[in-house]
Amino acid sequence: MQMDVMWVIFLFALGACIGSFLNVVIYRMPRGQSIVFPASHCPTCGRAIQWYDNIPLLSWMRLKGKCRFCKASISPRYLLVEATTAILVGGLFVCYYLLDIRDGAGTLSQSWPMFAAHAVLLCALFACAIIDIEHWIVPLEVCWFASLVGIASATAAPHGWMPPVSPSIGAMSLGAVAGLGISLLLMRYGLIQQSFLDADETAVNADNEKHGKKSKKGKNRKSVAITKDHGVNPRTEVLRELIFLAPPIAGALTAYLLVTRVEAIEKAWSFLTASAMHEKWSYASYLNGLLSGLFGYLLGGALVWGMRILGTLGFGKEAMGMGDVHILAAVGAVCGWIVPSIAFFVAPFFGLIWAIYLLLGRNQRELPYGPWLAAASLAVMLFYDGFRELLRPYGVALGLFAR
Ligand SMILES: [Zn+2]
Image (cartoon, rainbow, N blue to C red; front, side, top):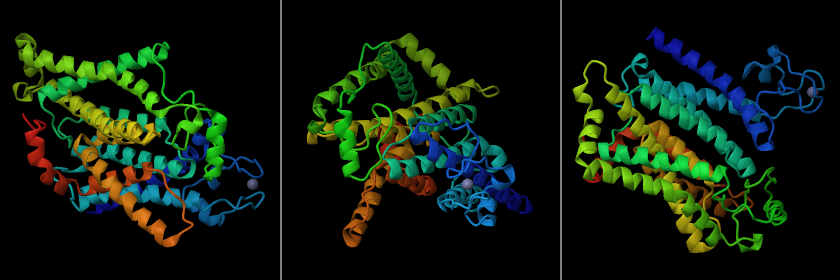
């Protein structure tokens, strides 16, 4: 018990420190500045902030939100971000290990890689949500980082909490990842083109101003939905995305045919993925952990990307951003396929509640979709056990649980 209290205090303090770093990410990343250099300084007088004035939570309160030198006020947002991150990280520990809301979580020493990955995901989602609300963009690098941590922890902690996937779905995931690599290489060498690149930047910026959104730096970082008024046809732009997606889809199909139609490969694959056969040093369970992380990443991304393609074709204007694709992909990489599948359907309800609030209050600001995806993911992570039981019959029907 005493140990638990120590952990809560430690993780709360650690969360505050991470929040302090998130403040840097939230301020600098959308402005195209480096997040490591230069060191923190007062934006008004430019003087470097000393370490003793940079202690999360405490320094802001002691200085009463003012710069020590020029007395310029420092936004309470810094304090709020630090406090929220502290509550997210400390609260996750309380929910998982003290309130025991997750079946099979065990103790921290048993499942710490999973806990760490989930905490990293919450911090990443929080930073993405704030940046999306303020600038209408999602920093893809933050999503990539969370995805990598998720796949690494899924691989390293195979007895953790990742929902298992069947061998054939695992093979398809590997095939799709190989195809994704091919697409990225083709794009790098200019053989396929990114979509919406030719959108007229002055027209986009003018529209951003009109909607009170801050203009972005760099290409393909747009915050308004692109329509024909911006000099491109969204319906044909989507074709570029379909070309990009062709290799991953072909890769998944090829892998599926190989492990179901070619007997030698089928045998070898089921030997590799059957964890029961390697009790002592179960590399198979590492492989299965990796596969469940990859499948979660792909399914999370595919749900939003599919919606984006259908919506853009249907309405003739850009629907859902690529940032949203990366957000749900990261959720899938960290939590496995179940959380993004449910969050995808829960998020619109969160958005709806906000829409009603907008109707009642007037003059309130419209919000991007990323924060709703993030909030829905958090809700599903917390009520995971109930949702999983609800979905189990469908999962079995799809062969997702088959093992
Ligand atoms: Zn100052």
